[in-house]
Amino acid sequence: MRTPDIYKQLIAAVLRLLNQLNQMEKTPQPFGTDIQIHPSEIHTIAAIGDHPGCNMSELAGELGIAKPSVSEIVQKMEAKKLIARYKLLKNRKEVRLKLTPKGLTAYKGHAEFHADMYSEIYSHMKKLPEEALREFKDTLDQISSSLGTETPDTTEGESK
Image (cartoon, rainbow, N blue to C red; front, side, top):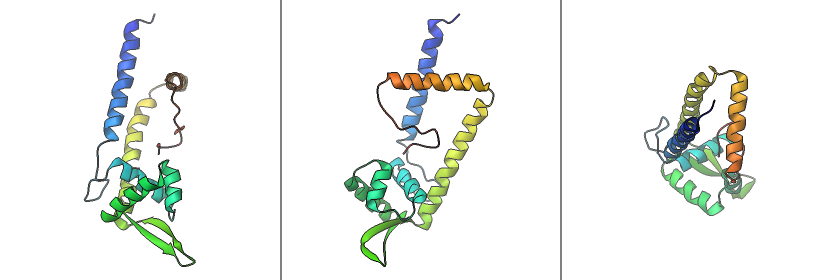
């Protein structure tokens, strides 16, 4: 028999998890470099690392933000020597982006950070029967749907 107490405990656990994730998204980290990298910067590094040679418009689309915001982030990251702009010989107008060695270190550090985090999560999930995992996922999907906000499906990796 289910008691209302377990519902409250589950909701409290979900809220605690959301607060922890929210705090992680606000906290800069070095990701293997000698500087603190903000979440918006590491997401930009990840997008450039996943799409080397992208231009500003492509990067804005990948991140889901406006081009002026991308320009601002790119300027700050250039100053930190995380990314570099360059132009192709055949098209001197279009600016392309690439990771610097420090940016590549951060890109790899970010991937390791997620691998470690996912490994810890997977170790707990492995203890549950597959049917329980499916039910848990369905329940989270239903809760998410009932909140009435649309977010991209990120089941294949991290959100952008």
